[in-house]
Image 1 (cartoon, rainbow, N blue to C red):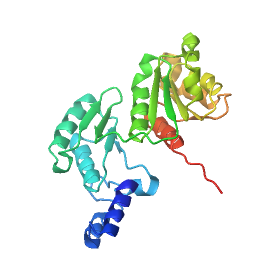
Image 2: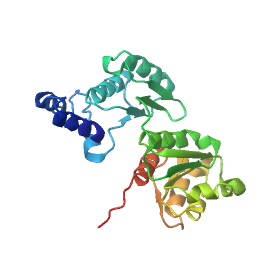
Image 3: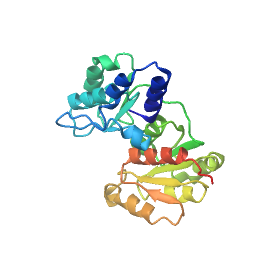
Length: 262
């Protein structure tokens, strides 16, 4: 259950549209459901503002579909499962389509992001925009994972792809977009220089995400990771190699931050 669902439920109780007993039944599933192989956290959205996301790697299509069913039955309006390959996604979409609770919900798969989406994307309600930049087309898998994650958290996303430092004039053409952003995610393999360059152009937090793209001495993204960790640009944070989900998630949280007054 997400905060919006809990607020709506309590509003209906207050107006008499939902009985106290029915409300108790809906809330009684907290804080998780026991499936044996998994314990879906049905109230993570209430605690943190963001509902549980399923990590699909290492899980069978049947397990992913059952976890989706549990989250939807608890009142979650949208569910995403990350790191789902094409073959597994086909089975997940078929299984989820057979679930009664998901009958009226769109179920889609983004092959670039490797993400299964159940439900509609939420309206954009952040403070500004989240810019997702990647150095090369080879980084697209990670960039799309970040972009779709931020969109599913209610951020307006601007995609700027193939703007690596080998042709830095391409990046400089987007200076005005960077200045208006709430947060920027920079995704790069090779030597990972994009993060430092972008960090010197922005007035917002920059989240650097190294990818495993590169030749032998890139060591599967380790070179880019170390370069980003040693960036001289202040305000740049770094997530793990190929962790587009984590980068997009952090950017969306920044985009939705509220200034405390008083």
